[in-house]
Image 1 (cartoon, rainbow, N blue to C red):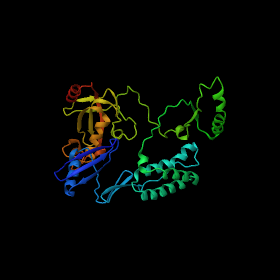
Image 2: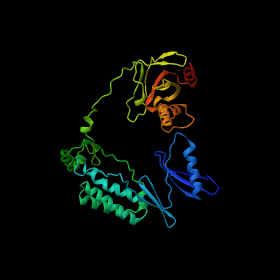
Image 3: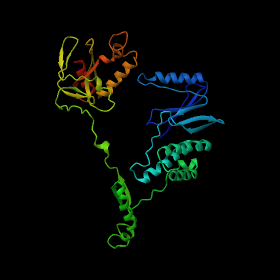
Image 4: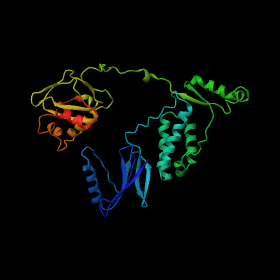
Length: 360
């Protein structure tokens, strides 16, 4: 849900923001001097060194996700915004999908535009653009005309109204894998449903016609596999191994050496005897510089990948006050390409156990 926050950063500046906790975008309206607003933004950018903000200030209009906000007659006006990178590759109409599904897509997009556009003239222009997008996807004029006719009978206030019909139904679902050949079967059932309703043995079970539901059949993408499969790792194999999750930043810097031997500052040698991955938690870990063999020993109760991601961010942003970031940035000759990560010890869940193992 949207939340509203008011912050008085100075006596003259009031900022009202509206944000969604599921996204990382915030839009706000500031009343006061622009200098005070810029001071507030500078404070937000330095509030946490691990967070990076980008901002846009305008006296006329700003873009927030798919919405363009502007000021007209001392009121905030909203309009639908199409990003330059939008391809508008909606589902092609001739594709093998239930017609009830494809026929509803144009209306749903027009309903979305009706909710966003606060001005009827803007909505009329946007509607023509949306219709042109669906014409390029081979939607018939009959479907597009019906969608336009339906949306023209809905004002903006009604578009936001939730559905109030929650009457429970006793209709029995008929679940089928969709294929054009099943359409005659469905039609035959509906033609003969009256027979079921009047038959003494079935009328109690079919007071209403059954409701047809289609499941998605497996397509070619469900049968394809990756060209290169990751090598299976025996769970008992000692060492630290990549988790092979998508978008894991730790996998590229994980040590692949199964026999990694860690040499401490006093020439004490430690061999890894346990099995770890990027998702291992409650561990003592080691960051190794492959160029100069300097070690950084740390501990975390979170997943190893979460902690290493913070180290990688500090290196890329060259954050001051972070020893790891200082070592892998100029004037040092070492770079982030020289970083290697390995978990060393699996600890209990208490902070005391991890700290004791880290300093051992």
